[in-house]
Every structure is written in structure tokens, then in C-alpha cells.
Amino acid sequence: METAAAAGQPVLKLTGIGKEFGAIRALHDVDMQVFPGEVVGLMGDNGAGKSTLVKIIAGNFRPSHGEVHFDGNAVHFHRPIDARAVGIEVVYQDLALADNLTAAANVFLGRELTRKFGPFALLDHKAMAARALELFGELRSETRPHDLVKQMSGGQRQAVAIARTRLSNARLVMMDEPTAAISVRQVEQVLSLIHRLKEQGVAVMLISHRMPDVFAVCDRVVVMRRGEKRADKPIRDTSPEEVTALITGAKEAA
Amino acid sequence: MAMPLESPISFTNVGRIKWWRRGLFASQTGYVLLALVVLLIVMHFASQYFFTQGNMQNVAKNFSFVAIATLGVTFVIITGGIDLSVGSMMCFSAMITSMVMSGLSTPGMLGAALFVHMADDGKTVVANMPGLILIVSILAGLGAALIVGLVNGFCIAVLGLSPFVTTLGMLSIVRGLGYVVSNGRGSFPGGPDADYFYALTSGDVFGVPAPFIYLVILAVVMAVVLHHTTFGRHVFALGGNEKAAELTGIPVARVKIEVYVICALAAGLQGIIISGWLGSAPANMATSYELNVIAAAVIGGANLAGGGGGPLGAIVGCVLLEVIRNGLVLAQVNSYWQQALVGVIIILAVLVDRIRSRVT
Image (cartoon, rainbow over the protein chains, first blue to last red):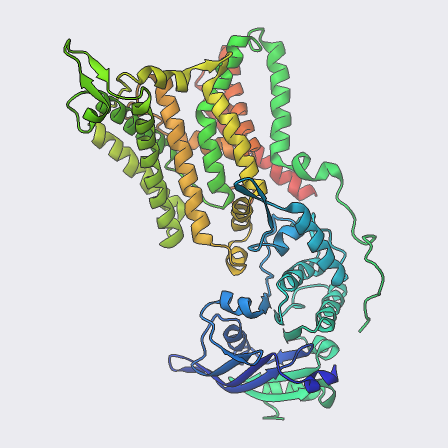
């Protein structure tokens, strides 16, 4: 959605972010903006600083330098839960699902709905299943709320993990290698899930090694190398060849 | 990039799992329950004494003596932990309960003045409400268990020690404390409230043994807690994927401490009930019971890797072990075979489950 950038305020704005671990400089002076309804691909080789950047945004690390603004306000996260409270969700590579529970139970994990029975609060299974079915419907995923996650395909698991972010009405969803370990057909499903998030005005940050996926769904690509941002351009102004050159360092910056 | 179709979702692509491959039917608990039913039928034909009222009461009583503790340890096993200190805990709790009971009933002992006084003719007289000593002493026994459970939970959840090592240490510590406080002699419930104590622990209601009634009530409560409360959901999540539980904001440390406390309290209650049946709390009471309790839980389908188990499985496991023991006695088989057979059944139960999960 090329119009997204013109839509005004960025949902996430990083200015001069730096991070040192002892003598190691993991990130240096990174500026970046993400707008609502925009899908940004974050690419880079191992050790380029992608995960450090993601962990700073998600509240796992505090930056050594620089400022994080979310929705126009400066934010300082101490723990991941602080980031979730303002509307930043991460879909982890291993998805963080409990296999022995149902899809609905996983979507509502840690945020269970309850009903009062006298002095006791009991789980409201019906309401949770209904809401989970609604979310799977929004995501166009053929997932039954009552099925156990261990019996599901990779694509369905992704849908469960993404439905979890929709539950909290996240403004920014960061996805860590969502297409790394699943079949071709399921990759298609995941990419369409990302389109669904975008349609709902959610900003998505896609951390991926897979060039075709990034070029299929992203509006913009950011390339990291050795802790610095080397490129940040609309996807239509670049090519897989150029991005590869930026990642490997064959081309210094664009 | 193919855009998804704008039609209501159908589940045509996603098959439903057949009913006999879901829920209880596909669980180890289901298989063991089936095995139990078969065994009961075989026993009925093998021995005319098996289904007599007396023998049934006996079986119900005997398995209730381990089943309450099994319910408790099942909580811990579902989270992927283990508690080896339950046997020692049973003894310690029972010992504290009977020591407090006799202490408070003996004029001149610390605190006893609040509860009893010596009459002119040298008899002790209850100073206030009858039964109060009983309540205080049971609370003392459970309080001791609570403290041990908290220590277990703290070491495991906060200090990050392994459950196996922590509770193995606690097995020894608590057993040792039992010998220390009793000087190795054990203790006896005594005083004016001892009759109430025996009635509550080894009495019966219309022929149903009291421990069995407690067991049924606790099992129902446990089923509701596990499947219909947030806490129960978190217990399962912890056993399924601890990292996921943490990432979704579940208070992992608190849930862990809570399950070890529940386990300790169940073991303590179990010990108090056993001491009522024995009429004393000897210092070597319930030695190695932790193995019976864990075996029963595992046979009933609790998964030692975490994430599976429930009250029905715990009870089925206990009943199966007791029926086999009872059956061997009725069949006049040397009772030393029992222990070997229990081991075989543990391995068989887990093996059947493994084969099934390979097939499907």
C-alpha cells in the first residue's frame, strides 16, 4: 500500500538506536519508521543486528542510545509485557504455542475469559471458542477452535499465533522468520495472513531470509549489515539482486 | 501472490479427527480404564469373594490411602515436574498432627492450658468446644506440609533447581525431621478428641469408607480446577511449553509454587488419614510411598514429560494397582510378586501409549 506512508504519523519511530553488549557494538545509529497498514521487510545476514533490533522494539533489551516512539509518544520498555501493553506483538519463530492445548486455548493463553459463578471465576469456553472462530475467519484460516494444536499443520499454527496478536488489537506485529520451516502451500497461507493484518491497518515487520516472500508481501525493505541500516527503500524501487548485494556487502549502501 | 477468496471459510480441507481417536478414547487413561474393567470381570469369575461388600470396602479404602496424594502429585506432573518428597511428607504431617493433638490434650504441656484442664479427681476435662483440639492439630499438620511445599516450590521456581534433585533432597530432609521431632519413636493421636479423629479418618458413612468420600470430593474439585479455571489452564500450558507460557505472560513461578504446595497439602492430608487408620504415626510410616504414588499417576496417563494427566487417570491408576494386589491375595499368589507386577504394568501402560502414538 504505497499510500500508507503518506497517511501521516508513523506507528513506530526509531531514532538513533544503538546497542552495545560490553565491547561489542550490535547496533549503531539506526533510524526507522513504520506506518499503519505497512509491511516492512527486515533483512540481513546472521549477526547483522536484526534480532537485537527486534528485541529492543519488543522490550527484551533496552537500547544503549536513541529513542523509541510509539504512536508519537516516547516509550521505555522494561519487560516484553510493557511493549505488549501499548500494542506491540511478536510472533516467534517457534510460535510459542502449547501443543497440548486447543487452538482457542492457545489464542487466549494468559488472557483467558472467565465468568463468575458465585465467588468462583470459571473459564468461559463458549465465548473463547466463538471469538477464536471469528479471528480464524478474519484470517481465512480453516482452523477449528477445539482442535489440539499438536494435530495442526504449520500454516494453521501460524494462524493461531497470529490470531493471538489480533486478540489484543496489536498496532504493530513483528514476525520472526514465519516461513522458515513450512511447506510451499503453507507459505502461501502465511503470506495471505500478512495481507489480512495489513488490511486491518496493522503494521507488520517481517523478519525473513526468504527473498521471494519479502518481495511478495512487503511495501518496503530495510537491510541491516554489521549493526547498521544500509538501505530502506520501497520494494518497487529495488530488486532481489540489489538486496542480496546489500546483505552480503557487495554493495555498501542504497 | 494469490489473494485469498472472499467466501466464508469452509472446513472442507480440514478433516475432523474420528471420535475414537479423540479425548478419553484415545488416551492412556482410556486404555487403562478398559484394562481395569476387563480385570474386574476376570476377578469376578476367578474369585467368589471379590465382589463381596467386605472386599469392595477393603479395596475402596486401600486405594483411597494413596489416591489423594496421587491427585496432588498429578498436578506437579502435569507441569512437567516431579515430587519425590510425598512419602516423607505424609509421615511428617501425620506426626505433627498427632503430636500436637496429644500435646494439647495433656495438662501442663505448652499451650495445653487453652484447651484442657485437670479436674479435681485427676481426669482431664476439655475446657472449651469439643473438636477444637482436632481442628488445631490437623491445621498444624497441614501447615507443616504447606511450609515444605513452599520451600520445594521456591527452590524450583525461583532458584531454578531441578525438581528431581530438590524433592529428592526434601525426601531426606523431611524424613529426617520426622525422626528428630519424634526421637525415632513415632507418635500417637491421643486425648479427648482422638475418637473424633478416628471417626473422621477410618470411619465410614453407610458402609462407604470416609477416605473414599474425601477422595471423590477432591477429585471432582480437581477436575473443575484443571479444566474450568485459569489456574488449571496455566498448569497445562506450563507442561506443554514452558517458554510459550512465559512469553504469553503467565506467572510461571507462581503457578509452579502453587502446584508444589497443592501436592504437599494432598500428601499431608493423606498422611493424616493413614495415621488414623494405623492408629499411630510411626517414624518410618509411608516409606517409599512416593514410588507407588508416582507409579499410579503414570499408569493412569499422567505424562512425565508434562502437559497431560487428570484426576480420573490418577484414580484409575490407584484402583488398578489395588485390584491387582487384592486379586493376587485372593488367588493366593505369593504377595511378593505384587511389586514385580506393578513394575511390569508401569512399563506396559507407557508402552501401549507409545505404540498408539506411533500408529496414528
